[in-house]
Image 1 (cartoon, rainbow, N blue to C red):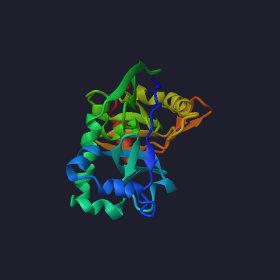
Image 2 (cartoon, rainbow, N blue to C red):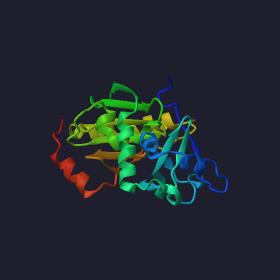
Image 3 (tube, rainbow, N blue to C red):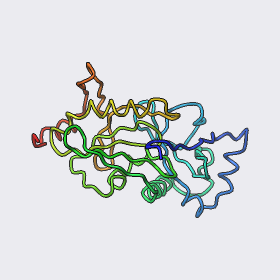
Length: 231
């Protein structure tokens, strides 16, 4: 099985074509509840004019979708009221379903001696698992959070932050993600994120001379860094 090989066909919400919107209209609330999932995608015309979405980072957004076999039906704002359910509850259903999905989880030793996790979906695309990372990593405690990349729509790489030495592995994580994204049909990039307590923020990390990384990080991340043991 390819490590990051699975993706969904996105059915654009288009009432002029009727297909996706008509398919959504046929779903009863109970059926919708079990089908909803979040999907991380690049901003583009295939999302339609008004998807139910949340910002993620730069050109990436999280869209609310209904699983329909090999397709992901994007839920548009103009039809989301038909079920009489608050948007916040729709998102809660989607995240609960995400935590129940089957995953292919592998671990490898990283260059800093930490554990590198590679996770991909076995049905629904796995990049969205960053929104429930403790579950995706098998219940691992993340008191300092984790470094995460989303090379493709179906996969993520994550390294729990244990010591200051963990951060020295960022250049390797970038290079690995670039290799995994190369040639993939749905690449998301090699940006490095910090996950902690359900939140995700970019570290704005860029490689310098191939072996070093320069970052522009938040005050919150700096505070966490200052408390880390040297390792």
